[in-house]
Image 1 (cartoon, rainbow, N blue to C red):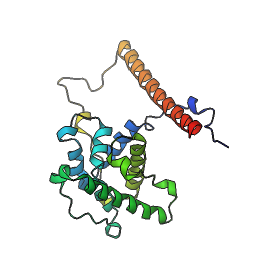
Image 2 (tube, one colour; image 1 turned 45 degrees about the vertical axis):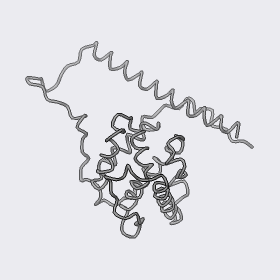
Image 3 (cartoon, rainbow, N blue to C red; image 1 turned 120 degrees about the vertical axis):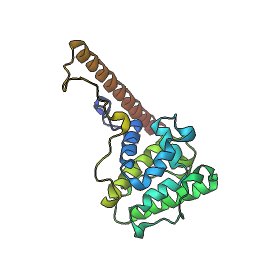
Image 4 (cartoon, one colour; image 1 turned 30 degrees about the vertical axis):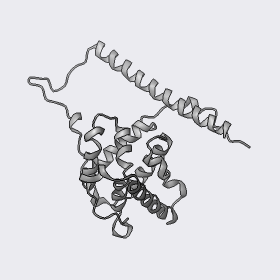
Length: 220
């Protein structure tokens, strides 16, 4: 018997953390709190990747494989994946075979975590091809979910003591500005309209994802 989604799935309220973009933003914000990963994060926003969106930046960076292994190695000495000393300055020059080998090592290492008394779905992992070919977004969704799970297991000492606020989000002080500004009715209305547009867009994307799953169930 073919499984079907619950009838109320399309009526489910969209969450700000369910889409691939929101998950990528969440992943990047958590990675920004890991000092040892800072060079890879800087690499993701440099060169030809600087003008790309956060999804493309992270995907292209992780497709080199080495950043995945380096992140995994933060679990501790007993969990090390042997990739040598990562040379970020030459990361862009890695051959496709070298990238695939590094991704394969990461996937095999994650497999050991699954076998270590953890549920199989705790670390959803994509295939090597899904990571390095940059074509199947479903593969990247699985990779992001896997990495978020992995971050949950990292020891406390790898994290910054306090989250750093991104520079672009730090409000700029204005001279002679009141400590608390009173918004006009027009500003309140404009804020409400923007919020409604954002929530509508999230719901639209969520509905498309549900419809895609339904189509896969029907035709597979």
